[in-house]
Amino acid sequence: MKVRIIAAASFLVIFSFCALVYSEVEAKGRNDEVSRQDAFEKFTKVVHTIEKYYVDEIEIDEIIDKALNGLLSNLDAHSSYLDSKQFGEMQIKTSGKFGGLGIHVGMRDGALTVVAPIEGTPADKAGIESGDIILKIDDRSTIGMNIDEAVELMRGTPNSPIRITIVRKSMEKPLEIPLVRAIINVQSVYAKTYKSDILYLRVTNFDANVAESLKKEITSRKATTKGIILDLRNNPGGLLDPAIKTVDIFIEDGVIVSQKGRVEKENKTFTASKRGTISDIPLVVLVNGGSASASEIVSGSLQDHRRAVIVGERTFGKGSVQLVMPLDEPDRNNAQDAIRITIARYYLPSGRTIQATGVEPDVEIKRASLKEVDDDFAIKEAQLKDHLEAQLSEISSQPKQAAKPDDSQLTNEQLNEDYQLKSALGILRGLIVLQDGKR
Image (tube, rainbow, N blue to C red; front, side):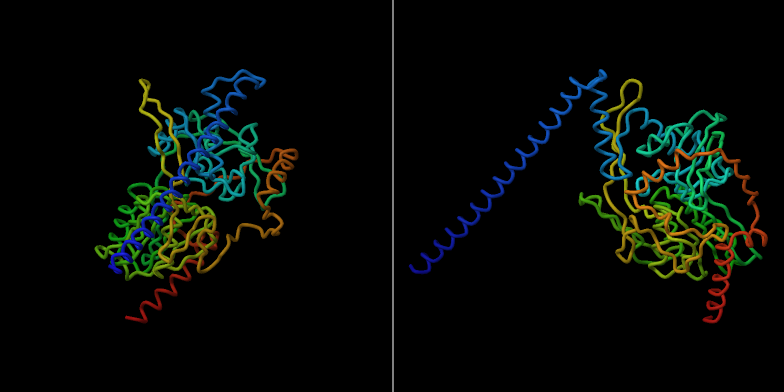
């Protein structure tokens, strides 16, 4: 009888505790719902107030579009609202052939910054460099402009002229560069040899065929190749899958990269397979501030696995995953709106993230052609807008930079002009000697 009384009392305590917890959860749910309703009511009041009192007459659709654009762009630099026109242009761009300048841009400290020019394009030939801040596009200031607006202004009809005004930390005054738009066809992999035993592979962008192209170039020269230089400088990234496959060429097992987000199904881990791995050839990877996203995954993962020596400068620091989500079905004109939203961040095998920090090279070597500058130029975001506005008032026309020489061959002259590449070659020669000593 006593046992029954104790059991009954225990049941009542447990039941009371569960009821209390349920009550608290239910109350929290009601409070959350009230908070959501209050927030939506606030938004509705603001929209109606703008519609009724704003100095210029503005349609409700335009108000909502502006609100959505502001909402997404304020989340982070890579999230945005895409109306049907912008979404259509984005699809054209990702098809691999479009009219423009050949510049990959990003936001750094609130300024529109060149991540990297695409090799062989008008921007590359005109001498635009990674790290340049785009101050003006034609006569429009980029201060407060988002990435999509800037890209839309820079793209246009092939053979049409455009002027880009840049701020470069090695120059005292802004530089205005006249350009002519062109159809941008991207070649992603360039292969060259140096003295028959060194294979130089330059990857300008991670498109769908990069890994296959790299594997083909390596395999065809494997009998004579003693070392490989993988040049990812000014590579702004691209697709994740070919970046993973590129790392898989060089490592036999282990994690290549993982992505983690708020939604559990977006949490993924990508691992290497032993099949077809080339693990016996010394490897040096070249990076700089224009190496971003997928190229940071490749260099960072190879660094964590101690498979390659990373040489050059700290990379850009873009380690987030964006998903483009159409908001509705295409209309009869095949137009639809979409949002581009950050859903996850990338993590390297060691667990570190590259977002905002980038990959630090094992051997830091700056470009010899750049003049040393004071740290005073490292302006924080809070000061950068004022600095750029001051530069706008002092703009003076400058002569166009000379076009870069043809880079179809890897020569001693080019090595002497490219101190990073020459240093990478020296490091690779040392690795080859160590490799031979172990055999």
